[in-house]
Length: 602
Image (cartoon, rainbow, N blue to C red; front, top):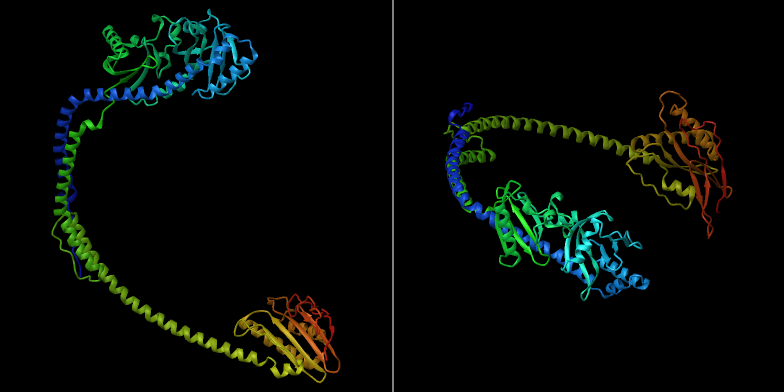
């Protein structure tokens, strides 16, 4: 039976129909989403930026205050130490000096930067040690000079009225940039010096501004608007405490207009006097418009400023209407696709699936109905053609399997017959090999009292024992021939024949001579003297001869040893045979074997 070839779907193909309808749905929903998005975005952008800026600056405030407050509190505790105050009055006392330096080192271990400094007003000596303890035993660095600009911070701090100040400065003697916590050491109204710690500037800026994201820039200002922390070090105002207002790098200098400077100054004053918790205003900084959120750090009299570029910061939650529209659009698209799939794909595939199940069950007569001229219809036609092909091949295969099964059965029967014939031959050979072994009566006559262990691995093999009795005595031999199974059995037949010839024609009471003659005759029998392609076949053997007339036993061995023990408690004794095998090509035909005489029990 044949089937017509599948028709090409052409213009009405399933793929084109899907793309057309999906395109129409996306155009409709996309246009509606675009209109709604533009309407929502116009009213949301400003509020979104303000909300984000306020939350961001408050989070920065909380994050910065903790570490700074901790360092400041510890620095103020250091400045309030009675021991340090006592030492400041009597700096030359070595006992006080050692105790004071030990206490300073104790504070150093708890400062975040693991560093401290102290400057004593009486001598103007400056003491310092850092996290690496590099200045131990040389903490006194230099003497402060009011004429040096690098030391102006100290004299400005002593001259001021504040109990402390936070000063960003570069210390030329130490060659470091730090945010210094300068705390006045007082004894009542008397100022004894300045002490505290410092935070490495780059690390402090990295920590303070680590949460900055794209479109957001965090700046720290002091009470006068001087920039204390900025990602660009060029904007930072160093040694502010020793500068006049006109010399400082302030945020005011970066603003575009006097109106913005005035507005910023007013808002900072309002924050400083608790009139506002946080303020938001629009500023143009270096020509770039920003939404600025400012919060006041009361404890250190600083301000944290977050400059937000609203073009880069949006909140996803503000676009809920758009998300809802998108969800409904996707739902409508899913419904439309489901309906189309059900009509053009699912129903035809269900019928095709029914036919495939019938074919899977072995019924190749059921063919699917082709009622659409699209990809599914082409697939159905191809399936019908495949079903017919499979049916034809299945019938041919079943016929071949039947023929092959008959051939295998015949081969199996022939193999079984051959196996039975071979096994019968081997079993018969076993009977022949066992027939040449001495009977128990012969062994009893030769040895009187004996036991025998003989357990061949195969039906026939290369191991056997030999016994012969004459008027002078009895001979016993144990032989291990080359090979197992049938080859070994053939060797035993040859060796048995040679032994019979030697013991009957030459001698039976000289084991050493018997070994020599067996070696010579077996090499000749197996053509081991020929230098052609001869096989290495031979044997190992041990021979004993017991004399009737005297209580002696004669033993000779070729790679065999004799173990013997007298009656009683005497130890087991081993008599070694010659280390020379018989019958092999490598065996020396002129080898002289040795006889060993043993006293036999009566």
